[in-house]
Image (cartoon, rainbow, N blue to C red):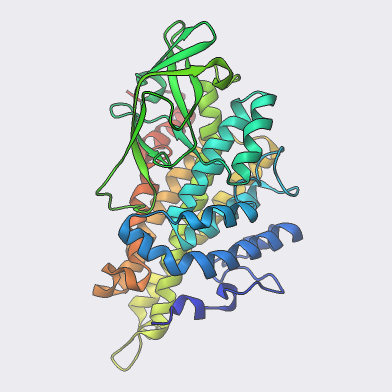
Amino acid sequence: MTDPLLALDDSLDPQPLAVFKPLASDFFGYENLLSEPEKAALVALRAYLESDVRPIANGCWDRAEFPMQIVKPLAALGAYSFGWEETRPFENSAVFRGFVALEMARVDASVATFVGVQNGLAAGTISVCGSAEQRAEWLPRIASGEVIGAFGLTEPLSGSDAAQGLTTTATRDGDSWTLNGAKRWIGNATFSDITIIWAKDTADNQVKGFLVSRGTPGFTTTKIEGKISLRAVQNADIVLENVVVPERMRLQNANSFKDTARVLRLTRAEVSWAAVGNAIGAYDAAVAYAKSREQFGKPIGGHQLVQDLLVKSLGNITASLGMVVRVSQLLDEGTQRDEHSALTKAYTTSRMRETVAWCRELFGGNGVTLEYNVARHFADAEAIYSYEGTQEMNTLIVGRTITGQAAFV
């Protein structure tokens, strides 16, 4: 069948646009805040996602396969390089980088998650915590897609309490370190070339970061099967048994969990943008369906209750867009704080979860099949809601700021 999303409006045309046009779901036109080079880059990315990613997204999700053929084309479009001084192709804003995450999640949240790990967690960690030499060595290779990265923080028994509960250890012996422990839910790790492993130094009990290359003895990964969300993302269980890493592969500016948190502050805001994009993906599908599906002698979009679902969904999207734009502006201004990104992540993912449910509801029974382009967004919302800080943890970060009292335990 012809995908009705491509007929929704000309901003979804798979051919590059001569004139930039914000998405119809960007109701207040926030994309008009972007510079002309940023708009051109976003148009090129949108065209590629529509022509090469959308047609395969449902199949990859259904088979739980990641489309490796998109890695290099996304690199050519700058998807892994926009944020870092060593690799960015032109001066760009955090708002633009947020719209990049939104565009990807609007088409396929699994692809957005892959890029978020590659560019945000892997390249971001090296940029924030690496030495000048490490940044020069690894960031261009990640930006080009030559090297795929992963980020190993979460453990089987340690997620929200990673600051205190991390059990993976690192012991120094001369010019090398020995790592022992386990990690879980590590995106990209089944095929990554390097994985950033966070471990506690047995000498000072501080969390440090290490670059572990694929094939290192004692480093094994096992794909997590049976997921109902972000199925194309290749999450892995990792076991580290006496993994020896040279000192030069220790991130030289990662000396405590505070350094880890500096990375998460940046990526948490980007996940919020992806949440908005995932909600827009479901909303776009719902609008297209409302215009084409007929019941009681007319398109269902002509019925009051259907319009109510669409208006409530658009309201959630518009409010969330205002929040993510502002938190990214704060990042550009250098004034973004942990509680800013935490509130944004908590709010936008809640509104996303609500929105995708309303949009799926609009389809009736058809909404539970991949064919109609809403079921994938509905299911993927569950993972986006939980990763990069659960709803509860982000709420408590903001609650601490409001009251001055920590209530984590």
